Length: 158
Image (cartoon, rainbow, N blue to C red; front, side):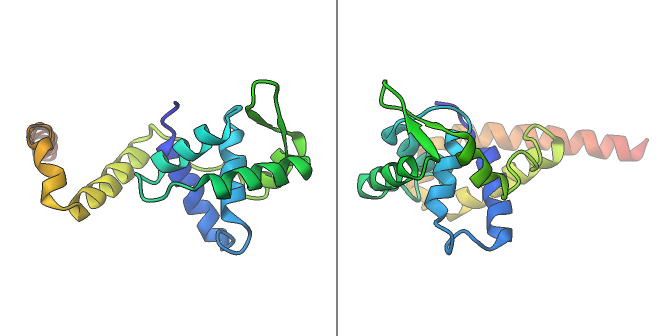
């Protein structure tokens, strides 16, 4: 599965700024946005949403499958022979009002640092028992951050 969390976070920030997430059927827009990446079945959509929210939200089959049926009825998506759903032109138009593709591309220094900051905030909120198994990895990250800090100090002294 494609790890698109950075792209989806950027999309969700824009989506929330528009102020329509809750009032406009946020799950429908998220599903259409995920289908804009390529065909997926209901289980793949639930997994993608679970992954992009770091496990905080996983829509139920009772939410996803009626939504997919209604979106197909509304001609926003089509169900392919393999059981996966594909976005139609009408579906693309539906999400175009949210400016898909106009957000910052992942991979820039700014977006990487924002992602690191967001992920560190998430890690700070976790209970210690969930983090203790990652002690060595966290130490390695701390060493790398120390090297970056040292590099910055040596640059500023030049």
